[in-house]
Length: 259
Image 1 (tube, rainbow, N blue to C red):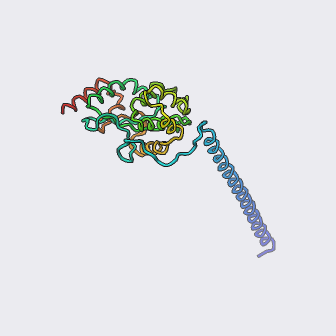
Image 2 (image 1 turned 135 degrees about the horizontal axis):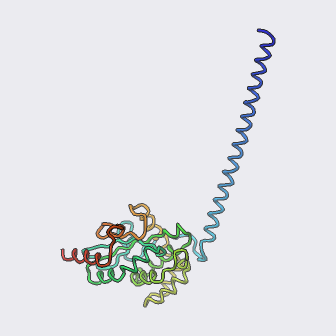
Image 3 (image 1 turned 30 degrees about the vertical axis):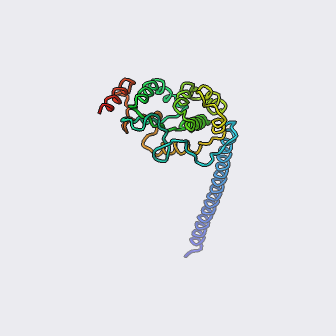
């Protein structure tokens, strides 16, 4: 082999080695940069989470305590609050969020009919409390209101307080129910509810863990929007082509009561 060819091949090898060194150097710098970005992102996320926890409202209690179901809660995982006579032939199952405007519209349109059918012994209503809006818009109004409603259940006054909360429902973006003082103030409109025991239950968030359990059960169900309304296990509220009306609900429940 001539010296010229040998030098040419050596020169080519040297250029290839130099190119590989440059590629390795670039790769190393890239990995270092990616690692730094990941660290910053993690730290930033942690700071964001901390900010959410710190800024989640003015209430003293920030974390849920032990799971305490309200008195009389029934069903799987005891996340159901029943209203009406247990032997009623029809059962209305309602998934609601106290901050949900659609739930407020449902209550406005159907409340009187539902309560009348319950009073006649024809209908039992199973309520499941959900906290979707807190997750979507942030805040604690869904959680605090649901806990307060569970506290009212302890006092045997769930239905009256439930209806009162929806009658005084704030705008969806207004987390007024995040203020426990507001929830206690409203309780004064339900005779006999504003007691030291109720106030402590609301302020301590006694049923917060139970509310979260109720929401988790809803999240794992086949239903993902509020309000979800079932009559004897059948979804009767979500069909836009055949919308439910108070009269239709009354007719179905009355027919079922007659057998």
